[in-house]
Length: 235
Length: 110
Image (cartoon, rainbow over all chains, first blue to last red):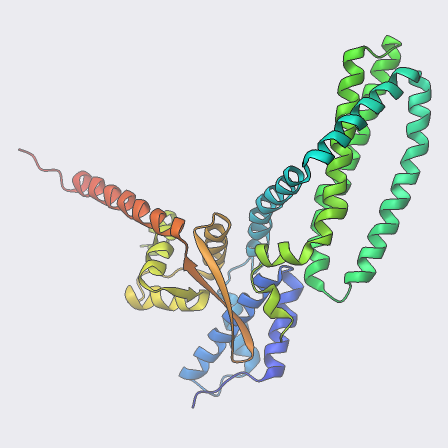
């Protein structure tokens, strides 16, 4: 009978791996890899201590350790996030939603026609804290809801950081740049009003999808992106 | 000779080929298998293996299956249909490359 790792030792490996890698499917495969390596060493010599065997095995990952694996995985995942968001956006467009979207664009177009540029920037200035407060409150609510599931928290974190926070900052700077241009000209042309209305609605829709719709279906996407999510609950 | 460098570019092809002949495999098994088949001449390093596997996974060439073994979860990789097609074309590519190298190294003067 070959010497096997105890549950505590596997737990130790797990704790070590989770410090360096945040995606759970990668975590579990690295834990398994390290465990296999250590047990293989014990086949040769049973008397090697767990710590020495562990260090020996970790050395094989080179100077960058798990870092490189984590980073590359993150890059591959981004592509999955893009497809996921794109699919959700396209899936959103059924007939009633299309009509509602077109109406929204038209409504904003009309509103922009009624407003002076100064009023628009003032309105936007008031809108920003309201939206920010809502985002912070909703993020906290999501965090409380999912704090037991690390996998979901990681999923949410990437979504909110890369696909909500950064786009918001970009949109904001684009908005102010446009406003200052409009102020110089003194008015907004018909054409610009349509474009602005369209962009605002599309961006609003994008936020709705990334911020609300996708987190609701997080479990489904998690199992697609990191297989084994369903099994995780059974251990 | 730095043996590993020679094979750097072909790691994806090697992985696909291994999975083609072995139904499903997990990471550690792959490193051992490569060592065994090449009698230690070629070692796939851990730091290169996993990113390569994850790349194949992201491209939909392999599918993943998770099983519980010895109190831990094991992640198995297996070829998808797309992966099988890719294996055929990658192998053909590699063969063509080897042929070219052969002619370069042993030119026949006629």
